[in-house]
Image (cartoon, rainbow, N blue to C red; front, side, top):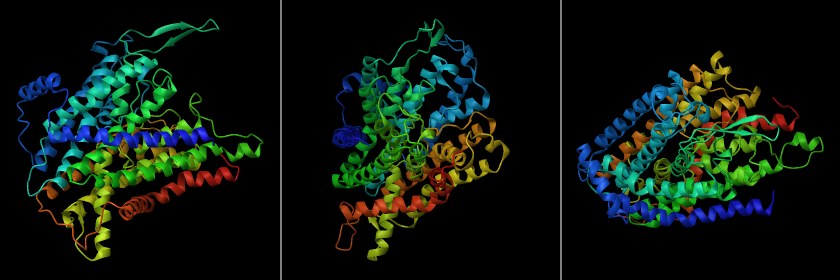
Length: 567
């Protein structure tokens, strides 16, 4: 461990906290439908979309209509992307001449990008055309991110509105989020990444002669545009197979730091937007405080474990941290920070291989996803995930003070609790159930490269990443098989909408309720006591749910390494 390493983690934390309010103000204006600074340019485009689609943006939708519109849009997105991948060989912008994608892989990939997961059972530069990368993946990176933010907006309205059945208009939210938030951010980021050396071209791959006199193909393509929305939209799918460990996708230390900031920018800002919408920004700051506390502990544990290195190497007289699989240009601290940040959100991008982390270092990104990626969270998904835990926490607090639980002026009753429990239970049921199937079937056991607890961690991480809509891979697992393509696709689809739809139902139920005035018996939800309770509920629920599986995986792996055994 070094002072510079801890300084990087501290500096990053302070900067993204400072950006939370500016991002939140911007998002709040989009949330309320206020006129934006770019309205003179984008406004005609926005209105043109509404006319073309026959949409009245001012027409409110109840939660069922909102959910139906959201599901229709996303199912059609899966169909469209699947068609693009299957017809890839006949479509333009394919200078490498790649053929259509195999059916089950195309299905897995289509579900992956539409659900904001971006799990990749392929090497982008060796299998996907520029058209598939741009019209397929990049477009869905925008659409899936906008869907998540729209769902967060709907849930915010549920808490903020009084005695109304409407929670907004999905089509208007989707359009405004894309045009006024995601597109401007991506343009700025894309241009910045080009200045750092990220390619943005439709030209064919380049053949270079090495110093040994051999020929090497250098993959090129429209990388910067996809990289920008991959990070800002917390998608994570890389243009290259190595993702952000590839020097063309992450060329400099400054580019690496900006990527990290873009991952947290929207998720942190949404907490302030929530506080502003419910009339007390301290509510949003309290949520952000809980997120930051969990994030800092995770980053510290991961960095400490990786800087400490492998005890087997120490026994052999080798001094130093664990550099296997690390991004050597940036160092152990940057790799540990990146792994923590990308799994604290639904991003899943990597600049180091999580499979080569120490067992405890690898446990941190795994547990981050298992918590529901509510530590800052993805573009929307983190906010509605932590609000669901907030409902659970105020219910527990209500039991303590002996009165009906309430949160930001809304009573939390049986309906909200049932829906919250459903949303909380869906991911672990998928993760543990499908991982169990994989560990007792021949097809499932053919996937992991390692044996023993580390091999189990590879399986557990895959289904955790899929059900949590993260998309990062532990590494070592051969996922491009019929077994994993199908089961991971199921995990991604149900993991996304099995949480999102209950959140919309909660929004609909809360919006019709009368406000409850804050009284002497009310549990305060803005101070340190509330933040501590919320963190405790999150960790305890996550710990009780996943501790047995973690004990069989990374924890057992750590004991085996300490005993001098590897797999």
